[in-house]
Image 1 (cartoon, rainbow, N blue to C red):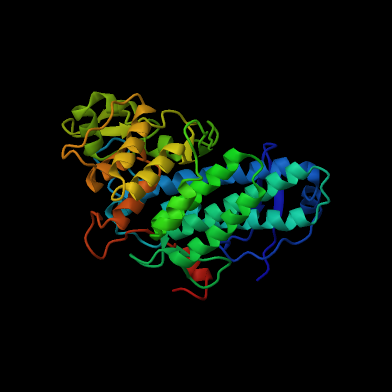
Image 2: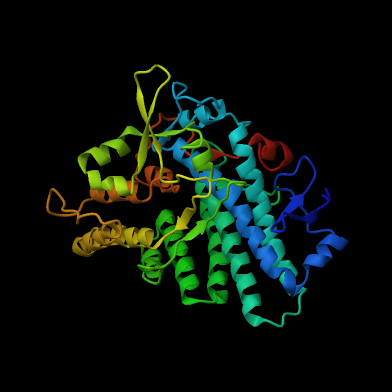
Length: 406
């Protein structure tokens, strides 16, 4: 099936892909058009790079991380919370997810489009005679970086059934997580080749370290984490606006608290008030005028950015890898992260850092960034009964259009 693809301007910044109503992942290469040819020009590269970053931010990054928080034990849905009315979020919270769940459609569709446009950018680059070598490298870096991110997101958050993570590309066969991670890794290895600055190289190295950590390869995870982000490095993050707000603010925070945080995050602040710096909450009374809930204020504004990778996470990756071989160094890394928030050094109750201690620090530092769902699956901490979803399902829309999956 040939789909008509047209790239057009939106607000002078965003290019969108216009496709048939049944567009999911089955997209063919760009069909030549005047509009498309206008973009195959060196002067348009900054515009195309911006378009990729904007498309990633919303509705891919923020939507997926919020849904992962709902499926994990970080956030929950309760109709007793004022304005909590979306049953789609309730399904995800309970892990009993209909394949036609409306909350899944936008992030999955646009993840497919993002994957397509990042790959298409590489094709476009080959057709341009660049005069600015640094700009060409930057374009290749961004295309490989976000091309790897799309494949990483499929492998980490989506699933064929309740317990089989992975995804599909171009309406092809299901690709299990391990194989999809290999595809992401290929993209990120290429991104390293085209990184313009040392900071960009460190970001990619941290992403590769995380991938290997999740894949269970401690040796490679450590090798890349040691080349990863360091204190002072700016996070790789998505940016939002009042026109395109952060989903956490819009549906799981001050904008509308359809999802509220697990009570343990309030308890962390009760046990140590200084923790409220990195675990900011606001109280909300239930409709029954009796039950108190807590909504996150980590993302207090529509335009609050959402981190995808930070130097603090890189430190926690190294801490996890050193936990059994060098617990003193692992504790130092945890305390380096805590110090960045002005928190006192952590002193283990047993005198030696334990896995439970590390998991608690990850729970606090990486809350509402998508890490918790993965950690629960990695360490056998899943909170829902057998037979419930542990990943987000590939939607029925894709299954209907894809002859390789039911």
